[in-house]
Amino acid sequence: MEFLVNFHALSLVIGFFFLFMLWRALCCYRIMPNLAYHKLKRSGFRGPTPSFPLGNLSEMMRDKIGNNSSLSPSPNITHDFHSTLFPYFAKWQKFYGKVFMYWLGTEPFVYIADPEFLKQMSKGIMGKSWGKPTVFKNDRKPMFGKGLVMAEGQDWLLHRHVITQAFSPSNLKDMASLMAESTTAMLDRWTSLISSSSLEIDAEREITTMAGEVIAKAIFGISCESGKRVIEKITAVQVALFKSNRFVGVPYSSLIMCPKQTLQAKMIGNQINALLRSIIKDRREKLINDHKNIPQKDLLGILLAGHLLEGKRGKKLTTRELVDECKTFFFAGQETSALLLMWTMMLLAIYPEWQDHLREEIKQVVGDGEVDPTMLAGLKKMGWVMNEVLRLYSPAPNLQRQAREMIKVSDGVVIPKGTNIWIDVISLHHDRDLWGNDVYEFRPERFKDDHLYGGCKHKMGFLPFGFGGRICVGRNFTLMEYKIALTLILKKFSLSLSPGYCHSPSTLLTLRPTHGLPLILHPL
Ligand code: HEM
Image 1 (cartoon, rainbow, N blue to C red):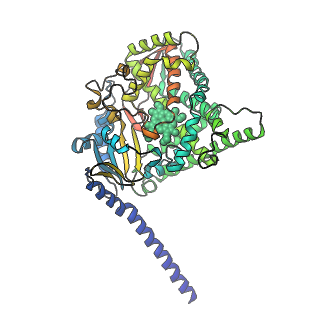
Image 2 (cartoon, rainbow, N blue to C red):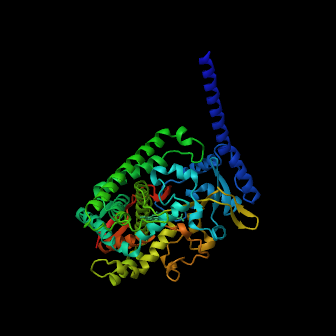
Image 3 (cartoon, rainbow, N blue to C red):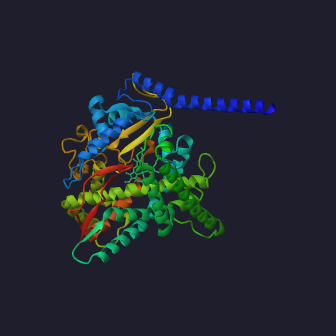
């Protein structure tokens, strides 16, 4: 009898639990998104009709597949690829304009490719008031954890304050020699490989390895071997997360549609955490045990040295927080910098006259000696080239935000709290209305008289490093690495495209050459 009573009680508890979970799921994935949909509609946002639970994903996938079949890789190089990369956005822009709403699963997104709307929306909003879409925070946890890219509110403020100081010009200056060292090692390898008058290289692999070494040394001071292990794992996480056919925003899709990849990404994420924890532990011990030991001048050394870590919370970054920041630097810093260099080499190979312009400038500014960080500001044309590459082939093709509070954009236009925001950077950078009729031409000289905006008609039309308080914290690091590496490369080699190169930019979080970048080197 007593057993039966207990059994009934247990069944009731389990029943209530399931009902509660069902109610929660219904609220999260049906009722709240529906409320958000109607709020956005009342605010005047239009967009394609979503269905439950995919939102607009099936239409996006259909458009993408339809477009891929017509995109056979071709040697004819066009810089006009927005509608090939994002056919659904290009199509919806025609129907709804440059601001509309669309749905990734049960998550509402406001799409923005209008710089004036962006300006009005972000007016007066501080960095700490922006969130990141919850759906991406969960999805990309193995890559970024709670590091700066995903941090919000007070946590973001503290970490940003600490990390900005670590990237100060004087700290960066100490990293210049590390950047030159890794590039020189790569060039020496190329020189020793050249047996005849030219050499074909896999520039994607070469540059990615070099940029990985630079990040490993400059950020963590770790040996190339440990660095390589972290980078290999990081690449594996990215492949596991982004190469599978995923339904981001669809409830429980990662568990239902691709459980193997999800588990794999989580496992590799844990391995990266363990690897970085052991590196940080060693460094901490070295610092505590050997008082005479001068802290290493890499970023981790600067962060561990302590005095920078007394943030507003009055406490140091914990090992866990440091691990997340280390991962974030690897993810945010290695691939983006490598891609910027790769797209530059591709464009310089197509436009050899710009190789000549840059070589002439290098001769005048740097001469035959070593590259000194104080000389880099003199490489003006190289700065124009960098900006033009960032405009045409922005390694970060979009920006994401989440409204942590209600945002009033203008009279009658309100973005409700919790709405996700998707800013289409490629569309802004390729907008004829903003850049003029030569928008798809490679013309670095557009940055000659307006080195910040390249003559763009709107200040929010050129966003390769983002905007506002959350602008990329590593941009000066990139600028230095770019100028040092490119100077050393152009001093030794001229570049041309291999006949095997197929031009087909695609996105795997960043904008990359789908079929790699085979280049031919000619020693000078
Ligand atoms: C070509 C190279 C790079 C590009 C194109 C790039 C681009 C960006 C973009 C677009 C953002 C988002 C900004 C926003 O949401 O408004 C960002 C943020 C960030 N980047 Fe970079 N980045 C580059 C290099 C680096 C490097 C070398 C590092 C570190 C070593 C780095 C670390 C970060 C971090 C930590 C954030 C988050 C900042 C925050 O939310 O406060 N980036 N970057």
